[in-house]
Every structure is written in structure tokens, then in C-alpha cells.
Length: 82
Image (cartoon, rainbow, N blue to C red):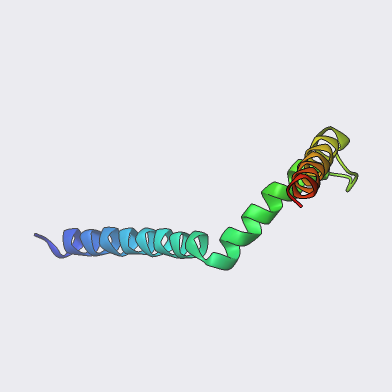
């Protein structure tokens, strides 16, 4: 191999190592528990709040009604048992 070919191969290896290091950094960032929690919270928030910060009633109302129904059922069962 000529010196120029050796230099080209070394440059290719260095570039590959830099790409690999960038990929590893991205994976570490994605696997960070704080970042996972932040993404999850953002996903949940997006379901209940629109881009302008207003509540999405089409999502909030069914959840509220369901919660009230579950609580009312539990209270009713508890009264029957007592």
C-alpha cells in the first residue's frame, strides 16, 4: 500500500469512528431516564393540551367522566358492603 492509500484508509477509519461516537452519544442520550420521562410527559401533555396551551376537551372530558364513574362505583360498593 502506498503512503497516500494508508492516509486515505486512516481518514476513513477516523471518520467511521466519529460517526460511531456520535451514534453512541445519541443512544446514551435517548436511554437517559430523565430524557425518557421528559418525552413521556410531553406525550401525555400533548394529549390533554394543544399547541396554544388550551385544554383539549375532547380528551379531558372522557377522562374526567370515567374517573368520576369509577369513584362513584367504588363509593357505592363500599356503602353496600358496610
